[in-house]
Length: 117
Image (cartoon, rainbow, N blue to C red):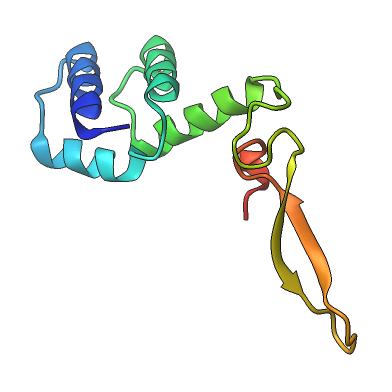
C-alpha cells in the first residue's frame, strides 16, 4: 500500500470516529501497516468500523487482516511465491553428526501466514 492510499484510508477512519487527523499518528500507522494490501486494509477498516466503538489500534487492524486472510479459501496456483504448492525451499540445514546436507522446506508465508516464522 502506498502513502497516498493510506492517507485516504486514515482520513476515512478519523471521520468515522470523529477524530482529528494527526500527521504523526498517520505516519506511525503507515510504518506498521504499509506491507498490507489496500484491499485487505479496506476490509479490516470496514470490520473495525462495524464493531469497534473506539479508534482502532495498529494491533487491532493487523489482527483483523489476519482473520480476513485466514478465512479466505486457499486458491492453488494463485501464489507467486510457491506457485500453488504450499511449500517453499529454504536454506539447507545439516543435522547434527550427519555428513550429508538435506533440502529443507517450510510452509509458504504468503499462503499460510499463521505458519510464517
